[in-house]
Image 1 (cartoon, rainbow, N blue to C red):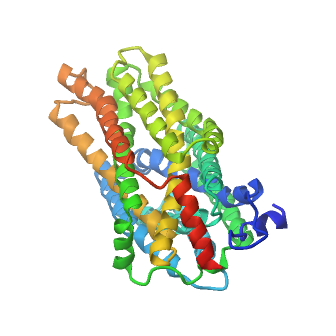
Image 2: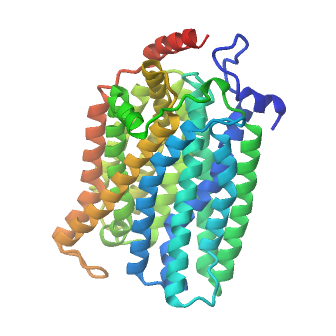
Image 3: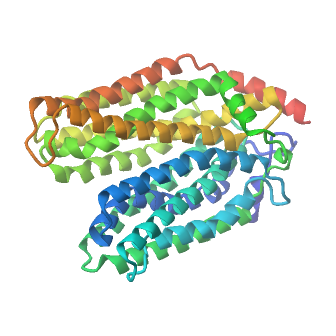
Amino acid sequence: MTTRAAESVTATRTGVGAPARLPLAAIALYAAPTAGVGFMDVFASLYLMKFATDVLGIAPATMGVIFLMSRIVGAVSDPIAGFLSDRTHSRLGRRRPWLLGIAIPLAVAFTCLWSPPERLAPAELALWTAVCVVLFQATVNFWQMPHDALGAELSDDYHDRNRIFGTKRVVFGVGALLVFAAVAGLTSASHPRPVARSIAIAASAVTVALMLYMAIRVRERAEFQGRGGARPFDVLADVWRNPHARILLFVFFAQQLGIGTIMVVAAYHTDYVLGSAGALSLVLGSFFLVSIACVPLWIVLGRRFEKKTLLLASMVMVCLAFGGMFFVGRGDVALLVSLAALAGAAGSAGDVVFPSLCADVIDWDELRTGERKEGVYFASWNFVAKTAQGLAGVATGFLLAASGFVPNQPQTATATLAIRALMSGYPLLCYALGALAFVRFRLDRAAHAALRAELDARRT
């Protein structure tokens, strides 16, 4: 990373010499640590439950309670981390003290999570795992909130924000894809505990190096220092009073309800409807790979079309993909993989455009309140996402039970129909409702340019 690229992160629209386009090197510097965070997050989400029950011998019910505790901690720590990050005032800036300070605790928590001492008794092992899961969740949140907020501050440019968050999505996705190799190594190992420990140590070392390098080299915008909201409940009220934010919160909630349901029910669908449980990795792989590959396309399209137009188009495409999944029958692996790829291609627009729109909405809040509350805004969207995903899991469980679903048995027509509906009709409905609400969004390119001009005049 060149010094020039690192210094360009500090440039603002208030200076005469401010760049019109943020260098890709500066964006890569910001996004680099998310490769490690993506690996850690997806690895824990995808395989920790199985590792804990099958390798460590912890009861599934105990792990369920532990995961519930971690979700509660996540729901509480997101707004706290966002608020404290906005309020921090130091010579390093608002975000960098957190980005520097959390890196090593996060790595230690992740390493300990996968490396419990073998001498622990069952109760002690459960306690060790519970503490590590909660600490890992908390440290991830206390790193992620300042990092998300920093992304919204790097540039005022309407199009640069697509590039920033699109690049971040690609880097995160690359880290997440490495999880498949790690899981393959673990599942084939005759002694998985030392393998898990080695994977965790290697991932932690790389992630800490990327985090520290980014936090040392990046520079924050001095004019944002000391401009966070003063009272927690007041700043949350400001988010709700922002009409653009309210729409985005509803749209995001609806989308996450749909996606959360699919992530829970996909394994049931491939097993009991498709009749090929082994196709799950192929379906998920096609979704993630195509999603990552299409990010550059949405960034390019973002320079020609309105963000609203792109996001509405992507939601319609996702609805078509979900609707088609209802007609998947036994053995239709190619059809399901194709529909998953279509959903991934369309859904990646949201990964690019949605956080970019969030940054635009934060500018509207600054114009109204005179404050910069990126941390609180991104914490609000994270809270909505986690709430929706939690509700999706609970609702899916109840609906499967109500349909007469019996595990490891041929399913009745009612249970099969319920799985089809949860994989197709319900997510389609969620996205359709989100699209209808998003039609009312009014902060387009021209409106943002006007408010940016007024903000620039105030800052000068």
